[in-house]
Length: 268
Image (cartoon, rainbow, N blue to C red; front, side, top):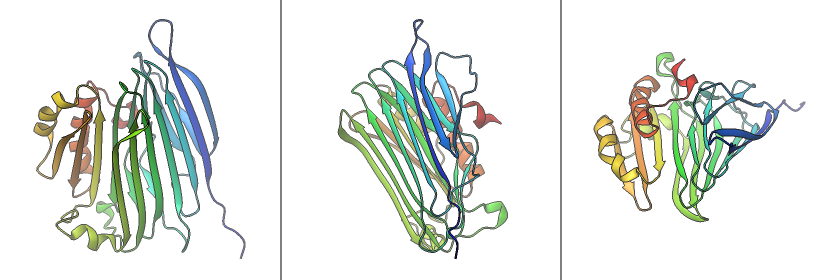
């Protein structure tokens, strides 16, 4: 049997501070299915939109992204649309690896749109963030377990999702989701998701984290909670029946923690 085609893609972006204090592009590389588009935002920071020209991820695909914000720079990364994780062939797993580096006084906002899992999807995903002592970071990762409007149910899925945030080389925040087999049954358990069909993890690292805890909690629905961890790390987990309801809760939280700004493509 001939080998099936597999997607490969890699992207790298670096930004620095210009002469007038604005963030400027320092380096950009892209190959394969990974593309980076820089829309005009009329602000002193830079937005980069990640585009997977393959239209989704399936077993055997490999996508890599690296981003660096130099001292004092600010970079927002988002995705063109929701990323779809399609059915994989038996024994094959798609891999997505993202590495972010944030220098002194800099900030990265990691704000991809939803990741939608289909039945028989297989995905290993890793996000690694390295922060300088006074660097800022905001992220959201959203998982949607089948499209509710289409009546999709996930009975067989492999998911390994890892998040690691380091400060000055030391672990600051570690998180992981591992799901195997009948996801619908797992999510129905009260200790896991109570029947929710979508989950978002929001993390904010910065000197303002403690002050933002109370305002963030006031915005969250009953199916969400927020906590302040040592080291100025604000974490929230949000559950909802579907992606639409989850987005309605996530957007106000992001706007609170990002000075009222959202990536342009989130508004389309």
